[in-house]
Length: 181
Length: 226
Image (cartoon, rainbow over all chains, first blue to last red; front, side, top):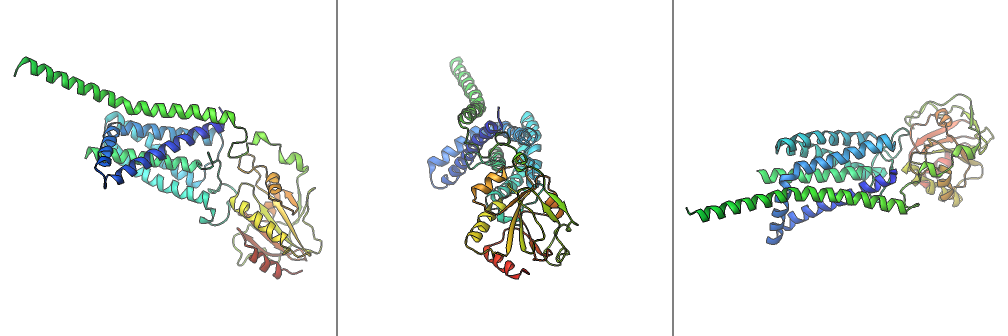
């Protein structure tokens, strides 16, 4: 198993995650206009809600495993922004595991808080990769956040993977919170 | 209530339960399937492509030091670490001399532009074509040398090796290969891209970091003591 295979694996998962998030958000928006879309949205969220905590755990677990693989096995050194995203991602594995085992919807609320913060940092990091001029305009010799380790399909970089995971976790958490209230 | 209707109600409840159980397992099953398909697709996609990778892997390319020969030799007192162009204490100081097989920084009566580059730094990647266009446009005076220093070389970082990158960009200036970082240290590098402008008498005229537009280079070169 090469590093490139792992990059591609996560790249595909990120595309799937973005597709799910965009699909659900689009359905929610269409629900304002169309009865059919509203029914479809209800159906989808009703199916996801009971499994949301377990599915959130799977996403957080895969993201954490990938993060550790890329830093410890592939030796891609995490920069400051990477660390902030890790701080938001790693606890989600534990929160979702406990919440799913105890079927506690409150877990989704704690997860949503962390995932929202993580998503904002990841989005900024992705923007920085495409527009390095957003920061000081120079590269820190030691560990710059502007360094792009890889881009799967010319698109999906490390913080893009994080962004996909955070958005999917946020989506699952919000669906769980919405259906239980 | 009749026996029959109770039976049918119990049957309906059992059916609902069965369908609920099926539904409970449907999504996780889809999730596992998606992950498995992604794994298979990743193995299939990356086994077929050799050049499809997003960055060159260190194992594919020869070491830079092998091609460059000996490490550069630095002599003279080092400059302080650069923090700001205003009130820079290094201005007026004599630069350290550097000798390397590929290029050297010596007191030869010519003013100099020293440009420190890191192959992985996107700001350097953006600046190199700007500088090359500036040179190609005839803006570099004949009595000013532009010497580049390829520093912070790391095979694990993207866009390695630096000599291939500079070749790709049609870089015409001499390159000092600073694998150990000794040259960067001696010149007080704090960020990439890093500029040291040197007067003809070998003293520092000014130091800057970041991308500089061609017009700024024109302005600075005009101010050099030549």
